[in-house]
Length: 177
Image (cartoon, rainbow, N blue to C red; front, side, top):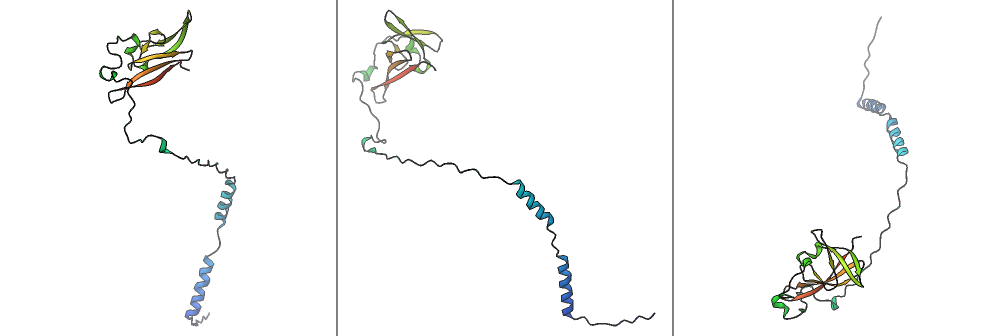
């Protein structure tokens, strides 16, 4: 057996074409798993987006400060009486039982009527129930009962205004709901 070897000349162009053919053989389209994942994701995410919330319209407010007092000037009310500035609103006053408690610690618990006179029932922080009527005093700020009805006791207090005078203020003791 005789084998004869012949040499063929391979030039650079043939070698380039051969490399390109080999390269293209390695680039096959194998994206089947990616296509399957995309299809599965599209199947799971079907749904509708909810409607957008309704936005409330803004109502503009026109602030007219020409009739109001200047907020940067100190507030001063007229004193109730000039003579009260020195010794308090009731000099020499003998305090009643409910004047030893602050007004916010008292609670209105009901009413009684006897011989046409209406009485209020006020409970102190000591759990004692006191019977009061119009004209009685209660609270630490010289409170005087102005009216009593089935739902509340209206009290007028005298509060120091910080400049030596006194300011009247109304407060209410209401029945708890």
